[in-house]
Image (cartoon, rainbow over all chains, first blue to last red; front, top):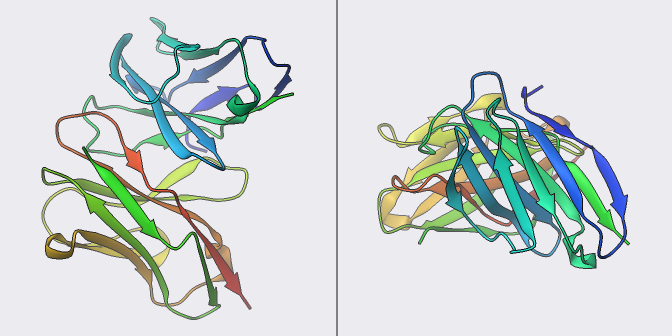
Length: 114
Length: 113
């Protein structure tokens, strides 16, 4: 158990819909990262927050947004969903700002868009 | 920009055989390098990492990797494979100025009895 909690574990929805994925980092970790894992794209970095502020941005679509709340949990919002958004979305956390250490990953949220 | 190339999307070995998973990186600055493992239906967990110091790094479950700057490589090895090693392995790089890990495409390791 990494200590990172993601909900929901599975989500099935239709094209055009909007979903929210939730992540609770390990106790004490200030950084939260979101990754998308799909068969064709591999593991893609989406976005990172540190103590409530956006820290780094990767290949995140404009239809996607994220935030980190004062209690340090984070949400990833995916809107106007397309079939290609079907993937496993991972949240990870770490204590440091700079990525010189270990990331602790949740078990992921599997999104299926029909 | 940093990048990672993992040679071989699938590797199959017999139980007890040597495991060698290849990773080459590209980085304009001295990199931090990582190997992560993903078991079925689980998140990724860190196997080992290189930041500074000794270039031969030992990790969990008997795995080790050697940072070779001249070859820009960070190959993962284990002398004797076990059935429980069957998983997907990801090499990752992080530079010293940004906060993100860039992952390779992964190598799925199969271990046959």
